Length: 163
Image 1 (cartoon, rainbow, N blue to C red):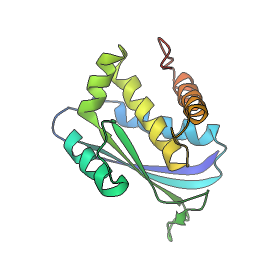
Image 2 (spheres, helix red, strand yellow):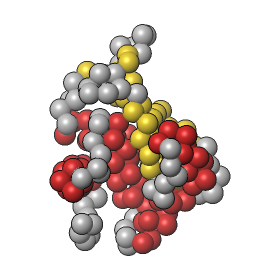
Image 3 (cartoon, rainbow, N blue to C red):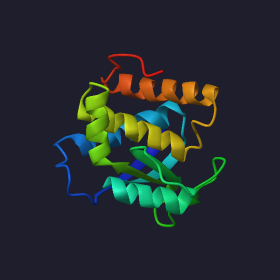
Image 4 (cartoon, rainbow, N blue to C red):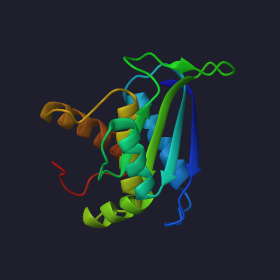
């Protein structure tokens, strides 16, 4: 389990008012993923709430293509090697960017709460920082299992299958 986790959340969007408790849920979700993955040491993760157009711009900048996804991960490390904060010694895992408006749309499309969607996007994002991807069918299944396990631990089980 991570010794100490610092989650820096920045709200750069004005489209959706962030409900009370979302920031704490996101922090708990980050903890759940790192614990499930057996992450050792202290860590730091940045999470930015943004508008859809800004997420698309970042996706184009970093991945060479626009995305219709609600979340992107910008890892700060590779193969388990991360930069460390010189003051705290924490491993800097990277940044997660979430389109909050898209999260609202997806929560309605999947018929579950906004809280569950934000937790899912966070879990997905943290796994992305740790090197997981949806590149192949087996990788997608493995990643989905890990996401759903974290949400189950947080009391947000799936109401239906997403496969």
